[in-house]
Length: 162
Image (tube, rainbow, N blue to C red; front, top):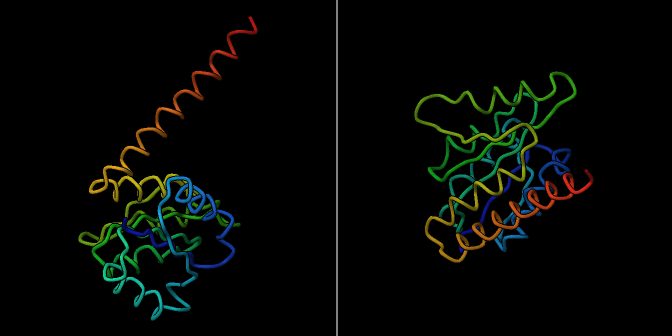
């Protein structure tokens, strides 16, 4: 199975990124997590991206706040799918990161999830890898069924109190 790379611009992003790591673990998907900054460690971020395919990765998740150039910097150096997580900051509530992540120039796409949307980033990475992995696709199908059952159980509980 292909691995997922998780890159965060700062270790302060770890509480957000942890939700992606937890989801990948739940699905049994191997991953590596690193702290590389698009601005402070551009060489290391570039090297990771350039070598990701050869190192067994199938998708990369990049989480950053504020200027949030990390996902774009990673995407500029690989043709693997890159999923950006814009992280909420203290000034503009993550809108700056969202716009920096989603507004990529033509030719360098970055899939972007919601602000702090790490669980969905992991699920999207899983869906990408599952295109060629029937066992993982089954796990994703099973998760959808379980998630639907939880919602229906809540509906049942809500209406049983009448």
